[in-house]
Length: 141
Image (cartoon, rainbow, N blue to C red):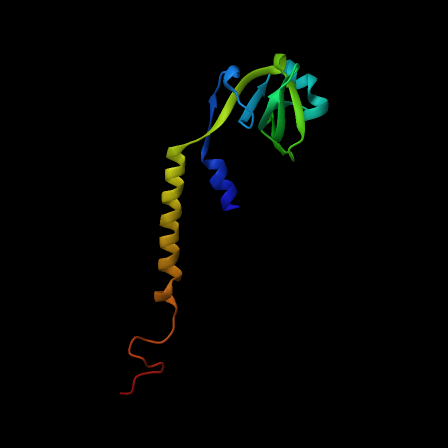
């Protein structure tokens, strides 16, 4: 679970010119209202954003290996990489996923702090074993 949060949290989606999209780019394609209606059979009702790897241009539009589809209500349906072609006339906007250096740095700092806190709380000093004097029982009076 931490890995999924780590991976999802370290990216930004930035606008991209359609002419600069290369295969294997991870895209978020926002659909027009008409596109959402027309693609309901293949993407599900009220689809708004299709996220996945760009495979190649086709005569019809964008061929994507779909990872998820976000509905207009904000629900996210996970996909297993099925290929869907999104016609150009159904596309409102295209954004490319890019690593956010700031988010990556903040998550790294948070991870290091978390590990140090955990080590302080559960590390060797808190083992509850023998006392430093070597005895394990009560001291004689």
